[in-house]
Image (tube, rainbow, N blue to C red; front, side, top):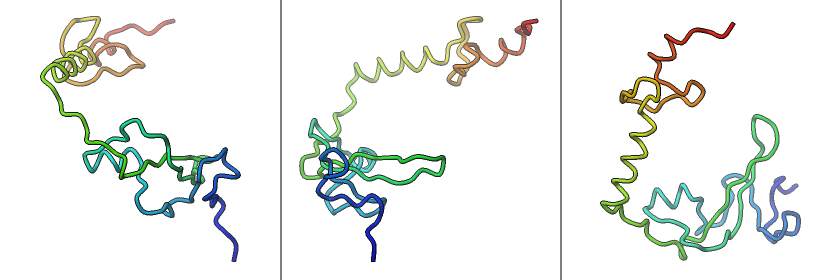
Length: 124
């Protein structure tokens, strides 16, 4: 029986980082997303391992894994951080052409709200 393609628990083939195939990581190791779902963050710890898989778009993808035992709680949202986040989101919704709040994040490829983009003449 052959081993899975990305099975490298000692890290010999992947620069010293233990590597496991998709869904085969040892217990106690989690991705950032998995930690976040538990209300945790890596908290400055080094990457403990990685999970690798073949992408359907070609090539190989990887996700870093962190130890649950070393994870720290997510920092709470302070009033100052909430204010800064609200300002940043408001800036993403404000059209530079007409100055109105579009109610959605402006498309980066247009740079304006959809109403202003519809009224912009096409370049000849």
